[in-house]
Length: 113
Image (cartoon, rainbow, N blue to C red):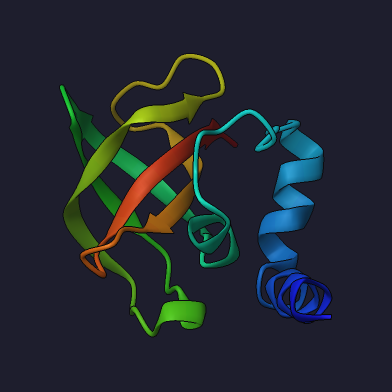
């Protein structure tokens, strides 16, 4: 019952991300993340300003699920982040953000829009 409830809450909170996921075929099934990380994952539309080893500077739309306004920020890109194709500076993307044990969000996946 707990898993069903958590799944329904996640589905409700990430409806926009789910639509983007269907359109871009982002498969989360092989991502080595805990159930807690997947339950807390959120999706956001963003522009990649720059991307380097382990970090990306992004300008993202508001993310109401976690109370973030639109902003530009540096974010950690997880070592096992799923990259759906080539991403270069200036690209519009959908980010999958996952919450770490430290309470901070990091990029777990990037899909070009």
